[in-house]
Image (cartoon, rainbow, N blue to C red; front, side, top):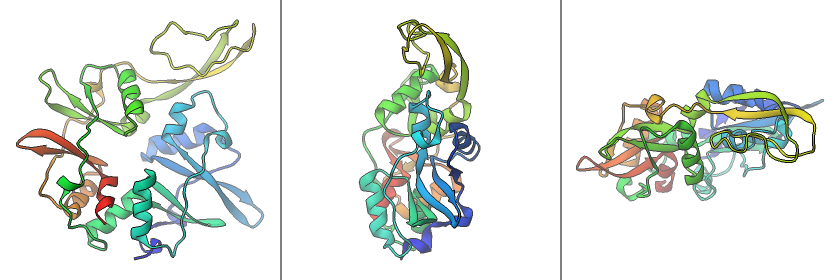
Amino acid sequence: MHVADAMTPREDVVTVELPGTRDDALKYLQERGFSSIPVVKPTDDGETYRGLVSRDDLIENPDEDQLAMLMRDVPTTTTDADLVGVARMMVAEGARRVPVVDDELDGILTVTDVVRAIARGDVEGGAQVDTLARREINTTYHEAPLTVVEREINYADVPYAVVLDDEGGMAGMLTEVDIIDVARVVEGEDDTGESLANEDDEWMWEGIKAVGNRYFPTRSVEIPREPAATFMSEELVTVSGHRTAEEVAQLLLSNDIEQTPLVDGGSLAGIVRDIDLLEGV
């Protein structure tokens, strides 16, 4: 099976154009729940592919407004590449979206595209998920402020946190998408002097650099401080270890989720992310 058989074609790919701003990308990340968006530059002959901008790029660089400074290079592929080979590259690189490029953007191959191929039986999906699941689980407390949970997710370098209640049981799931949905960019002016503004506010996330005694515009990503329980998904979909990758792929797609807790005897035993299913192809 080739990449062209599974990829999302160019006509269905949402892109942002250079020159552009962070708000151009944030609009789609919030409204569509995308993890990243290709960046293109219009030319007299059409367009050229320039890079990718992700939700992590926006959150980690709140003071940067120019799309050209936020985008980054990522691995690309071609339409005739072997799907299994590219899927394994995605696992190795931790890449959720791989642009399909031949000068111009031909499409994009996402983890979800490969998961669909697994769910349909187009590629191997017989491995049991207890061999694919990750035993290291990112968790948070249901009363932790969302600002703290965002930092926990960032430092763990995963897009989710399983939310635990007072007894240590699973209460829900909180994802990067949930945080992006409620995050907003605020603007204002600060007199910095020679130090960082609001440096004593432990939850303020400022993009301010000391440049002398003058006023200048600032941008901040503001995240609500209410507890995780306010924003988490309470209806948890779980799986047991004997389920196959194909069955779990179907489960993830039907519930529109990217990960599911692995349970053993009712206890949390691991996490199965959509990209983990690619390891079994």
